[in-house]
View 1 (cartoon, one colour):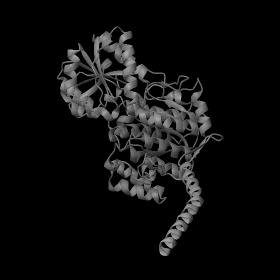
View 2: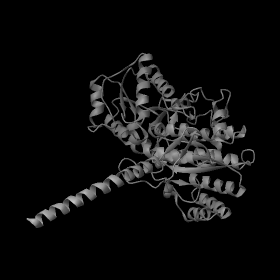
View 3: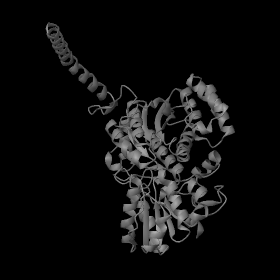
View 4: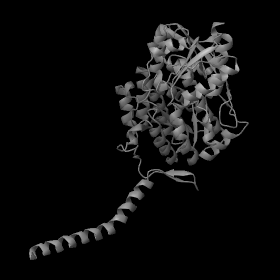
Length: 488
């Protein structure tokens, strides 16, 4: 009995000590936990900068992602598909600060693979480093999400950078481009935006590609006082996020209205079904704007349900259902990450319905995989080379650099970079001045084919171009996109 009492007292003492210890260290653990969380991304509104003490940011409950491997000025190769010994030697030399050797090696790499925009950007970065007088911009592209799209955008940036640097730079200062890989992932895009904002050497950013990524990153750029000009994101409301957000391409409203007018008035298709992606801002925006435009032009939208991201999505059933619903045409409006689903619907169509496409369908994959199933499909894009632009300096230089005139993504990325260069040329060399110059209602810059002007919203004032898929030899797939006005 006495032993039991002693044991009971000992247990009470241990329990008492345990409670005391928890009461002392509990608040400390809570304070440390909160302190670590506040260091992820902290926005200081007074000086509009974003500080990030650790570039590792958690996405949900997953492990942190190391962002260092997603950025490069030339010290690492991000487009591993275009690696060769010369390019590797250039990256090693750049990392070691031997910019003269790096420049030589990157130029040698271009002799092996001439249409590699990453190598051309790094060669120009090496020149900027040697001159020790630079203006640095960032560009974020989906290298790990859609490599072809990433390279199309990088070609436009590289061409504009090369053009200005070989002429002596902007007022003697050379353009240096830091490439970032966001995989078209909105969470990664936000982290990359935070890094760009934190890096005070970055004066402005060209990006992002997919509208979901641009919408996610835009608030960070605006709050950080850093101009973001997207070459390809057309979702509505993007530029309304803040006065530091600009768009080099057309908005979905302009593109959708142009395609709807053609479909109803020129193609005489008045009962149109729509396939879109409910998880994509650009896809849903295009669907909404196209629907309004079709009704305004005298047509109507049939009730066929087609959602590329639906768990029960079945491409085979959609054309038959659309025909049953009375459709005489079908609009394919995927996001850039849902191209394969759109191609599957085109295959299942078997020519029963006339096909129309949003700007995301203007990809090499559509030609390569779609073949005869997409023959005759009419799409709308921000720009496409036609007879009027064939002799433009942009197209001629693109043919020299890349072996072809490029598509709308290359042209719009070129225009986005040219806008920044024009703002630099006016004397703006810091973030605040760049935004002020671009927001001026009288600001204008020379683009791929037309003058670039912005509306007060930050949207570009421009119309798109209609293109049709038809047999051809330029793409190497057996089919080409051809501007419709070329066929008149």
